[in-house]
Length: 369
Image 1 (cartoon, rainbow, N blue to C red):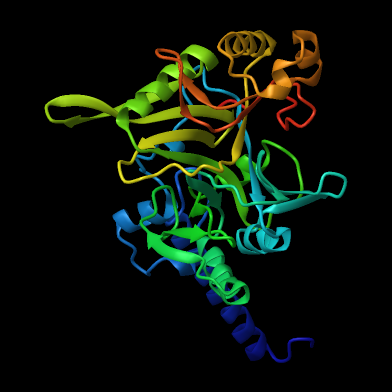
Image 2: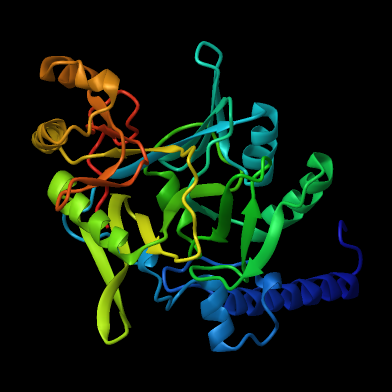
């Protein structure tokens, strides 16, 4: 009685069968457009008959980018944070939290604003603007949301934020090159490979992030190739970390163009600190600082001893004993020194910490890659 006559019931059940068949067909289409790890992409973002090359581009599968591969042996555990001074915290908040979808922490006692992305942060305080000498590269879940939001915020901040669209390397239809609100720093936002978001979010707990996933790469430009060679010697001698050297041939000579320092904080996240030769680049005088974590207490002590003997410690740290440094679980060096001639390659301060530092999010051993 509820469904009326027998003919009405037959029509209803027939329609339900048709819906069931359509749902099965839709499920098959979605399955066919899934990444190998079965993480489904939004069907409506792809053409009805997406060619294989386009599907790989959007999903991030088959990419040759180093960040889709596991971090090599002897990688450092974490690229922790970049510290930037900005003219206005409120503008930084609009760009990083509203535009890129980072998590937010504000400490009123220090006046610091932290933009969280996975286990890393960009940390801000008000003052004369400092510059990251290259590009900060961030993984997000939805690049379209970033481009739309920052195009809108550009009108609010009365400045052009979205500089250009680039070819995507790890996922999504494109990457976006951005200028921060103060137009002092360049940021590239791109999508992580499809389905990697949940694994990256599990590496560290923290404030919820609407879109940002991780600090993927921090690129540093240097005007001379010999400086890149000095950088490689620094990380090999003083830090003892895994690095990759890339060469190019100039005037019948193989010269180092790129040095990559590797970090492996957890599953699906391979971070790098990348130094690149750019003969047109002039290094700014007012640089930001970077925080890196070393593997264990033994490495921390060894790095400290080497830096102290070479006069690399900051003025404040140089006055402290090893026991004080050990209790604070961190020290700061004034820049990158070439051990071959003891010249400063770049005055980029490094905060070096142990994994048991209270601010390290990797309290447990990092998941296997």
